[in-house]
Length: 284
Image (cartoon, rainbow, N blue to C red):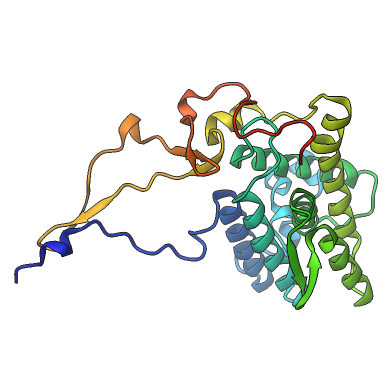
């Protein structure tokens, strides 16, 4: 059978819901959903293998406990669904749009640094506060709070009730209190989020000085702006075989976009990019 010439055009499969997520949100959401489900079904491990314990890290070298507590969202419950939904919606919305610029043009590297900041502050405050040894909800509501500060004029909703983004974290916290659910981890995440907001937005505007800077290794890895994984184009031959159109230039290195425009490749990035796409003092 002879194929029509139009059948030889390049084809791309529609990405799945997970594949359409920004890179950090994709891996965080996927890992959290998978680990939480496996732990609750007691497949391979249980929740007891995931909680944060400095003695176990120090004495038994269970280093994975530095990351695992941020990937377990709790037992099967309505609260688990709310946590996963908040992670999916607000991490996606924040990462895929204009994040606070701390040196990488307001893109993926800056978001990665923000998550690292939230995790570090959680470990430190664990020494002072009686927060549970599972930190997923803390980090989720940390992101929600920062998102609400970055986009305060947007409209959101809580169970169908319209709420301004600036008030969204407080509405969620109030709802948890009214329902009699545990809320300290949410309040803690909001407090850490406010500290981050103060250091990257309020302090620089008041004192004309930046405190937080995205490390060079994150900028070198993710580049400046939004990280876009390489997707080599393919074409379908007359025999139905799918082949790449050509080799990726530069050894297959990834490209990066900053607010939809082509930006410098990560292989040429060094130091902080305080230029185009960055935050100007006196603006959100």
